[in-house]
Length: 135
Ligand code: HEM
Image (tube, rainbow, N blue to C red):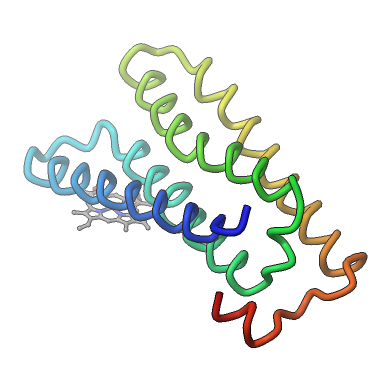
């Protein structure tokens, strides 16, 4: 998937927009019940997804595998579903979705790790050419 870095970064900023809006509402209302939702949307969503995007941009060889797309699906979906699960857990005392999403989140990181190992130790060319870096 050639534009996987762009997909990660766009999704990360969407999470940041919602995360910041939520922070403003929480602050204005002086109601911090859902602070963990805000925190995880910002940290799993904005910071983690943006970092993934920058790593794919720095090492374009990571894009040359189905592992990249799988990583986007697993980490991108759980950046949203896990905070929703935390909301359900707090509001309805039902942690099932958060628990399930946390395992999917872990699976995403394991796929990312496998792709990094593939590129750093087994691929022919891990360092991007000037053209690839600018793509
Ligand atoms: C304008 C942007 C933001 C606003 C208005 C905002 C607002 C808030 C508020 C009101 C709280 C609750 C504080 C409390 O419980 O006393 C909070 C907690 C938190 N925020 Fe934000 N936030 C913003 C951006 C961010 C970003 C960008 C991140 C991470 C990248 C972040 C991560 C966290 C974390 C981890 C907590 C939990 C802190 C704790 O419980 O000790 N926030 N935020």
